[in-house]
Amino acid sequence: MKLALAIVALAACGPDAATGDDSGSGEPAELAGIVDAHNAVRRMVQTSPALGDLVWDDTLAATARAWVAMCRDQDAPTGLIDHNPNRGQNVGENVFGSSGGATGDQAVASWASERNNYDYSTNTCNGICGHYTQIVWRSTTNVGCAIGSCSGLTFGNSIVCDYSPAGNVGSQKPY
Image (cartoon, rainbow, N blue to C red):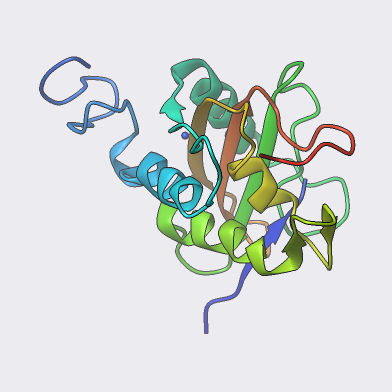
């Protein structure tokens, strides 16, 4: 049985030589479709004007890639990569970990499932909802993600996505 956990607290033409990506988004092949998955969640929000699409950001992805490669797990909960305290000012972050395989679709679906915990009318959360609200934060425009494997962690197959500008600012509503 696979166990997944998400904690509050991803070229012009042809394949990208650095990532092997041919979608034009810059996503690495192992995370192909993660930007589309984020944008599908954003399109489900009924608001006027509609939320804009996120776009891939190589700089955010490089930050996420360097962090996930460190496999740092010093903070609670144990067994999952920590949030990167040095990811940059005004950069949000979602972390996903799985004891089985990890895919971009799984990570985004896990974060988006928190929608059920969020009440827009009162801007309150019943449980965890910060991953979801980061995805649908109106002013967030860019995302960069990375995937890695940390064999010593319980949830060692990890995906980290960094967002700019950051969401979950103060007591503001996401959209």
